[in-house]
Image (cartoon, rainbow, N blue to C red; front, top):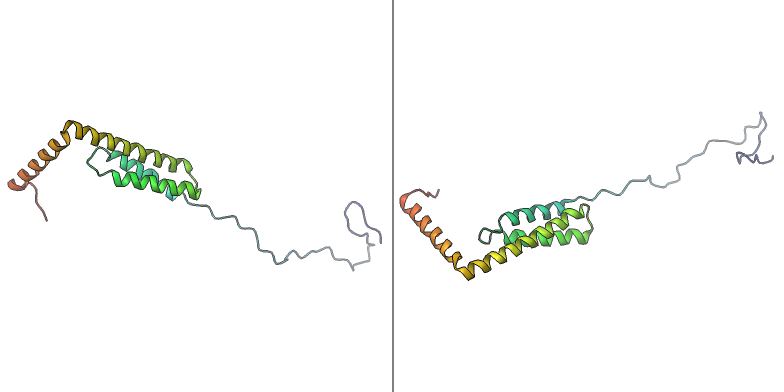
Length: 138
């Protein structure tokens, strides 16, 4: 028998059935499964914390924990190379900008003394509300 150049299979006569053309492909290798898609949860959390921190950056010190958390979670997301790197970067930037706004607000309040006046008027109003019964605790 000679090899057929076109197919790479040996030539067979019409009555020769000793050669089987079926091939068993079960070689024991596992089938291909794509790598599981990473979640962008850290990036989303960083962005949301940055937005919340920016909103609260002008109110007392409510935004500072959110700002710090946005920066930390954003850096962790960047180091882990999770998807949506842009959201992680935006969270870092928003957290940093909010911290800068908070620091500037504190400096202005210290220089002008308006921070103390605001807290005093707030406490006076709160005390008046308590005395008049407008504020009730459950």
